[in-house]
Figure 1 (cartoon, rainbow, N blue to C red):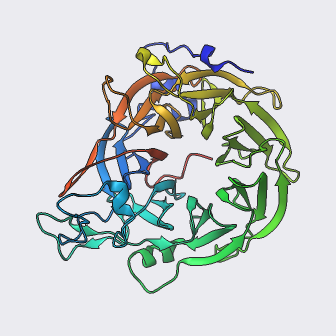
Figure 2: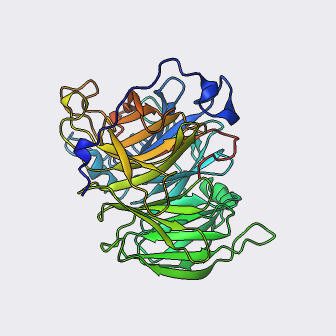
Length: 453
C-alpha cells in the first residue's frame, strides 16, 4: 500500500523561468492566466458562485443563486419572533425558490456559457460570461434598500438530483446526469436560454434511460461517444451520440461495462478524457483508486491506480507542458501536519508518460485546504486551481473561510504553492452570507475553444 504521508513532493523550481520555456507552441509573454479569464467556483452550502480573476488571484464577484431578500415582507423573510432561521432551514421553506445545493458545473465549448446544477432544486442555471450574469434573472419589482435588485430565474427543471451537466462537443446540447434517477436529461442549449428567461418552451429534448444513479457524462474527443458513470452501480454505460445534420443527438447504447472489480462499492463520481482523446480517466472514490480505459472499440482497462488508504479521490485533471505530462487527482482525505502544521488534503501526481499498465502515483503535494474537490488548469498548463469543501481552521490566516488554492505547475511534477484565495461573503440586505463548501471549479477563457479534454 502506498504511504502517501511520506510522498510530499519538493516545492522548489528554478526562479526566473521564462514563459517561452513553458510550452514551445505558446512561447509568448502572455502564457498563463490572461486578462478576461475567470475561475468559477460552485459553493454548495451558500448557493453562490465565486468568480476569481486568475491574473490577480482574488474574488471579483459573487453570483447570487439564492432567493433571499427578494421580498421584504414576512413570511418571505421567514423571520419568526424576530429570529431569522439558519440558511439551511430557510432553503426548506415552501416560499424559497432559489437554488438548493449548487454543485456541478461545466463550460460550453466556446467558453461563453456555463451550465450549473442545483442538486436539491432539480434544475440547471446558465451563466453568461459576457457580463457574468445569470441568464433569465429579472429586475425585482419590489427592489428597495432592504431587498436585492434581481429576482432569480427558475432555470431549467431537469429531474431528480442533477449531479453534473456536460455540453456536447458542438455546444448545441447539455447532457445532465440525474443521480437520483436512472436516466439522462438532454437539453437544447438555445431553448434552455429561452426557458430560463421565462419563455413558454420546454428545453429538455429527451430523456435517455441509463444505469442507476448516473453521476456524470463525458464525451469522446470527436463527440461520437458518450461515457456515463454511476455512484450507485458498478457499471459504465457507453452511448453512440448519432449527431444529425441539425447538430442534435439520437443516442443509442453501445455497451454496458461491469466495473465491479475496479469499483466494488459502485461509487464513481467523476471522469475526464485525456487531451489526446485516447483514454478516459475516472475516480472511484470509496475504492481509493483511479481507473483508465481505452477510448476504442473494446474500451479495455489500461490502468488501475492505487491512491492509498482512504485517499477518497474526487476529480482528475490533466497538465501537459514542456516539463511533462501528468494527471492530478484531488484527494478528499485530510492529513494532519500539513504546511505550517495545519491539516490539509493532498493532490496526487501520476506520470502519464509512463508505460500504460504501469502508471502510478509519483508524488503528492498538500492542497493548502481541507477536503480538496474540483481542480482545473489554465489553457497553457502553468497554473492549477483547487477548490475545497471545508473551511480553514482557527488560528490560520484565512480561518473560517472556504479557500481556493493556486499552484505554479510550470514543472507539473513539482507544483509550487502560490496563494490561498478566501472566497469571502455575499452581501445581502439582511446580512452577509458566507461562500462555503466549494465543489466544482472551472477555468474559462471566454471565446476560446475549451482547452481541456
